[in-house]
Image (cartoon, rainbow, N blue to C red; front, side, top):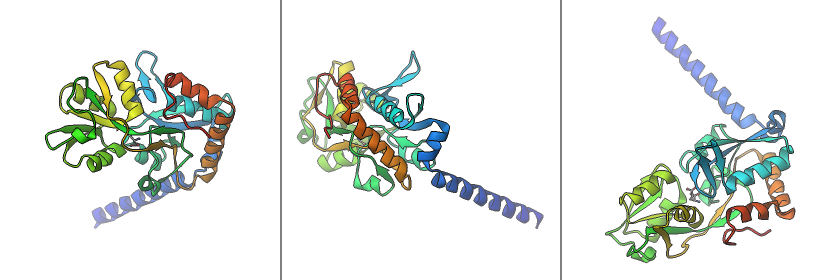
Length: 269
Ligand code: GLU
């Protein structure tokens, strides 16, 4: 009897704690708390060259997404506001946002109708498209070459997995936890091609001259900043900041820093 009472009591405690936590995340008005704390916490990639990549020497994460996040933080909080970066992967980013570990996701994330059921998105800040990365000399020249005898590598939780299954239904798809793992698998011959957004693949090809993109983009992947539902004030601030960054040239400066030779992906307002 005593035991049962005890477990009932701990169950009640658990329910109360969970409810309290749930309320805390939902009730927090990030537009307000970010100003009180003078910081915005961003979920970013740490293994994606050109967008969010950890510099192992300086322990600093660098890339287009990082600079855009810093720019938005400065617009919202002023020059002394701090942008805090937390690593996410394609699979962990929405759960980390939902449970309140981060205020926003800026991590090569495509705006999709399916994701809009769970989160809200800012205006588009980068236009990517899905493509293929292969070893130079590969017989795969485009998605039309991905038949039943080919294996394609992709990352869990990315749109790339669903898209490639539709575009090349015969091919075998192997899924990995993150982009570093996925590219290592390609290098060690575990697949014939790797697939994700062209801009991400270009970042890999630029560091690994034995690899090249094949066949051009076969989807549209407009990137947006994801924010929890119910944070409309914060979402409006983010969109306003992006707008100002387009107006005053900050966006173009950041774009040209990371993509000096290309205009693909640049968003014009
Ligand atoms: N943009 C695609 C997506 O949101 C692929 C890149 C990524 O995995 O973040 O799923």
